Image (cartoon, rainbow, N blue to C red; front, side, top):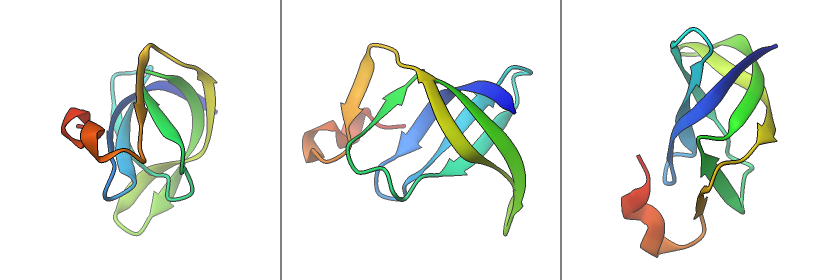
Length: 81
């Protein structure tokens, strides 16, 4: 398992990027998350081959930061990266 930090999350596409411990950005897809994504959360994950290259999979949230963005509220869309 690798570790990293949630760098960004796109509400409409359910995709984002994790920056791993080596500074590499790895994309992820979380279609089942309905409540919230917390930017700068520490996560563990594995790298798998997706249809467009390497992606993070089996993501486990280890800790959260203070940048909490409910993904079901339209008013927070402008805060997403």
